[in-house]
Length: 323
Ligand SMILES: Nc1ncnc2c1ncn2[C@@H]1O[C@H](COP(=O)(O)OP(=O)(O)OP(=O)(O)O)[C@@H](O)[C@H]1O
Ligand SMILES: [Mg+2]
Image (cartoon, rainbow, N blue to C red; front, top):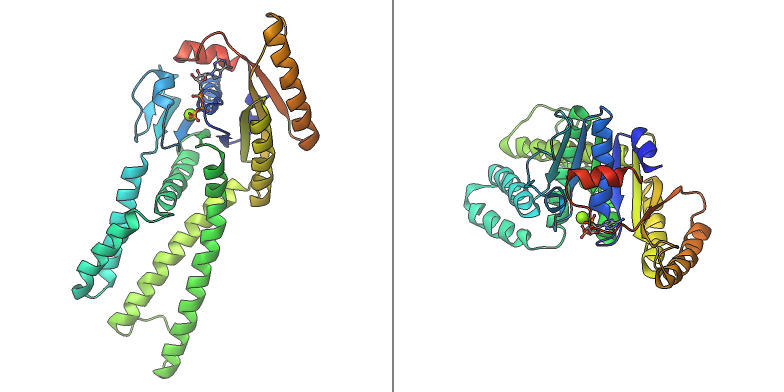
């Protein structure tokens, strides 16, 4: 079921609590897509990456073939949040230095050093990287699978393009008003675009940076909320808290406009391997009944608990058979 969902989409997000099997499912889906002839990319956005562990190889912050690379069709990348934040802040610092008077250079640097540790900076950097990877991913690959960080963080990240677009729009609007006012005071035509003085030139540059950013975020949001291209699958264990969190995550994603295309209930206990596991399965059944009552319209897929961990390409290939 998950494989057929992935076959009809260009971008697939895997989300859910820690340790439920997001990376395993993301890798298995991408591997299968690549074996079937699609170019697939797995992007890990979780700072505590385990893509490399699962494939038993080094991955890192560069697009790298996974396993045998499926004839060049399967690759992965682990976004490095620190390097991403550094690069992001460096870009912003350079722009600010160019736009601010020279005697404020020291001030700009101090401010950016503080920004490194301020809330939101890390998320903004990861979002920027995600935007890039959706852009290049859709250009160079047929399927981009995002293996995301545990729930709360991801739902916030998915809502961020909308929030930041609105914020940038507000900023642009205010700038436009003050520009019009400034022009009127100087007795100039407010519609004229020819730069008149360095200050005006600087204003135009700030405007165009903000506009560029708004356009990129709007493009990302367009992809995120396009149910024809993009879907979100929530991976969970059939336990009480994961079920409740899944219902909450589903609600949050729907509110953001993201389509939840599948629930993957991983590690289902077998009914025929002794009394202990049979009882466990009966408890799981109750939790799943709660899940089905709350989200009757979302397709639900169950994956049995395996005897061993899933490590390396051969095990992933077998795991994909279950999806
Ligand atoms: N159905 C299964 N049967 C047995 N083991 C499984 C199954 N699914 C996943 N595992 C194992 O469970 C462990 C956690 O899986 P995985 O790393 O995919 O979870 P995750 O959600 O990505 O975790 P994290 O949130 O820490 O990134 C791995 O060792 C994996 O091999
Ligand atoms: Mg993981």
